[in-house]
Length: 90
Image 1: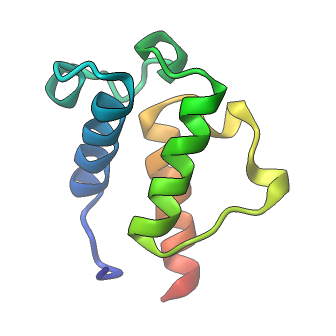
Image 2: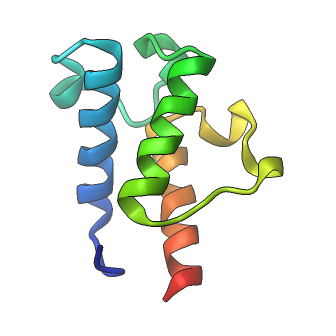
Image 3: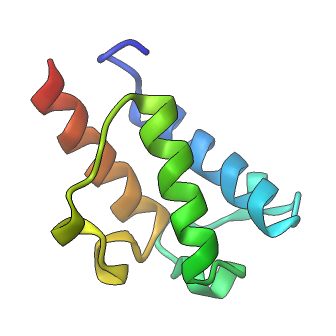
């Protein structure tokens, strides 16, 4: 995965994965990046699934202390977290 991946691509990836995990295909196009992902049908188990997908796809890992719900409360927060991790890898 290229380190210069555009933020829009990261957001689209997150929308797609959330839509798949929640079995709500409309979220791929309609998910508000600032809305709480809990309101999109993402419970703690689904968030863990999403984190696993993110770590594999972007070849990053999150430390245990980073794995708190507030850190991943919105698609925008997820995208920022991914961007920070990817900058550290560059």
